[in-house]
Image (cartoon, rainbow, N blue to C red; front, side, top):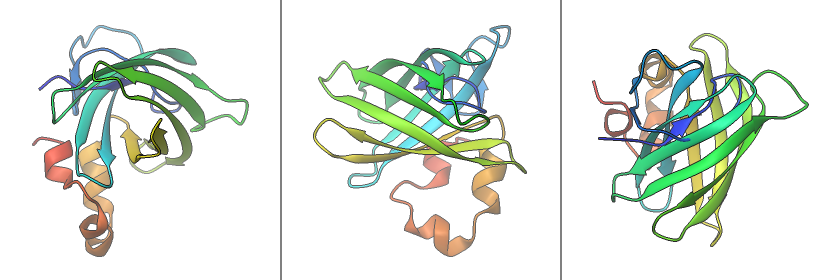
Length: 152
C-alpha cells in the first residue's frame, strides 16, 4: 500500500509514496517513513517525507485518500517541526511534531484536519521498535493497531 511520506525523522512531514517501514526509492536523500492514525475512526495513513530541513511529504490512507504536503523544521531544533497537507478527498490539515524519542529515533506529532478531526503521527526508520517499546496499555489506547500501521 502506498502511504503518506514525512520528511526527516528529526523534523516533520513531506509527501511521496512509500511503505511505512521503508522508502519507495532507497536512493532518495533524506527519505523517512511515517504513519498516522485518525483517533476518532481508526483510519491509518502511511507515507514518506523528504528533505533534511524541509521538503515534500505524501501519504495514502486506509480509505484510499491520497494526501500531499510540505514540512519544515521549526526554530526549536531537533525533533520539532510542522507540516501542512491536502488530501484528494478535500481534507486539509496541519501537524506539529513536538517529541523525538531518542532510543528508536522516532518523531511523534499531533495534527488536525480542517474540520477539527484529530490525527497522531510517527516518523522514523524504526517504527516497529518504537511501538513494541510502548506499554501494552498505551498500545491498547491507540485507535489504530500498530500492526495495521507498520506491516511486518
